[in-house]
Image (tube, rainbow, N blue to C red; front, top):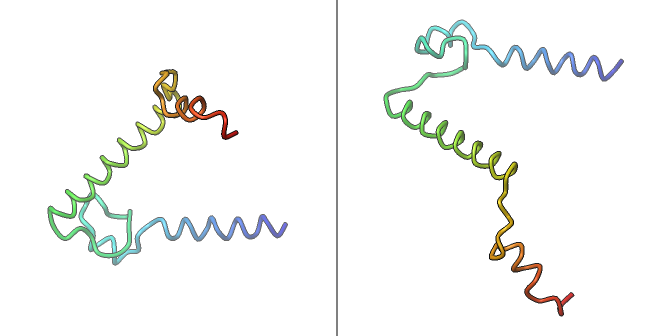
Amino acid sequence: MKKVAILTFVFVLMEVAAFACEVCKKNQPEILQDVTHGQGPQGQWDYIITWTAVVIVAVTLFLSIKLLIRPKEAGPDHIKNIVLHSNKSCL
């Protein structure tokens, strides 16, 4: 019962923190209203920086998932094979 109460409290706090208050809604640009607290982007550079970061994160996520699914470690010159087969006398 105590876990349920704590989880309920945490989820309620997350919901409150997830949406902007009325004052912040007025100060945000139309596209970001009701999304975030605080001051909105101050100029075009803020949007450029944000979208550059989004692109970098998306590319990194794509490549990490791709390499986790198909790592292509079959080549004889792959670093894994060099480490495994180079110096067996040390083991």
